[in-house]
Length: 418
Image 1 (cartoon, helix red, strand yellow):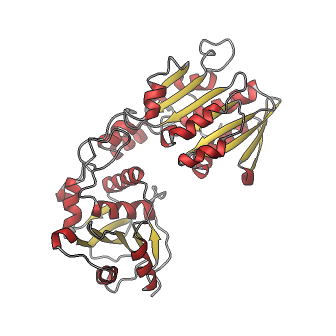
Image 2 (tube, helix red, strand yellow):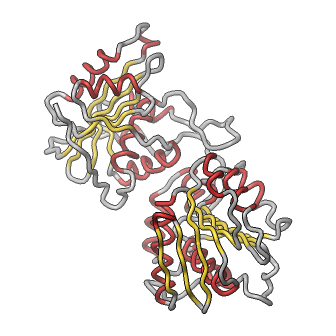
Image 3 (tube, rainbow, N blue to C red):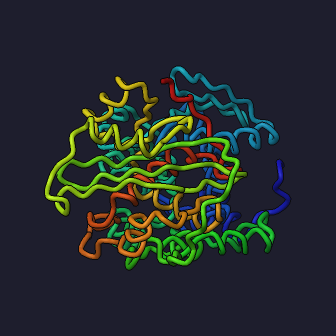
């Protein structure tokens, strides 16, 4: 089987817990949580298909991820070739988000869903399933997960969940993991040691990559609260002098405010590293006056100088300013504004030395020290909405230009037309 020579003890449990007559066969659900790269997704995907094809014929099943594209990329692209190696025949109808699998003499249908937001629950209503797999369930809204579970009314149906941890007050942790026994749910906690395909060197690299709350969640696999500084590893002395170049690409990122501060960062790529070489920061409260959109556009022109700017990455809510920039010839891209994933990516890039703050970017360096988690938040991880404007524009740049390009941190964009 592709790249897999053996399974760990926990992976074997995931693959076989459902087998009739086994010690765990009375369980009605399984939850696998824990560290990143711990082998839980592979075992869950294989186990789910093997169970469905062994125990049912002519039934429907659901497979859910936060988005359909992430589900295809993270689960189906890994699992389906392995099923093919085992003798399964499968065909996907992408226009219908439908997968038909024939294996072990049985033929079943698997419907693919994305659980991005509260409105996603409507997509899954009215369907009857013999079982459902929810990948990265902690990222899905509760309404969608509950609706998906309610669809499983066929005799012998089971629920399959996997996720990385979030905060200790997360609804899934409270209602499923802490109440696993009363729900007749098998809970397996995975660490990187449960993935035999990871070498000690790779495990050590992942351990170096994360810090603070992300280390405890993604390396130790703990459901812990975010606390303290967001970028707790960063110290002011980590700022560097602006390199002489040459710079191959330039971007500007912008967090726009009228009453709140507006922050702009000028980013240049030198070699394989992106540098924040200059910035503009205006606090209307401190200055006791407001700037117009035209004044902000002129400030951006001054920040860019005679450099060829690939694109301006901007707060997607800044509709009036976006229109002004487009009329003045700027190539504008609305920023990816997923806060937590953006913070995680920015943290990784800073630690890896792929994102560097240059000396002279005083407001960005100041906010790095004061950017903290909101200790009063009980529903989900939040940062305090103070000292976050340069932090937002930095996150916009990382998530929109470098998001999804983790290996080489390459960027692709349309050049600005003037």
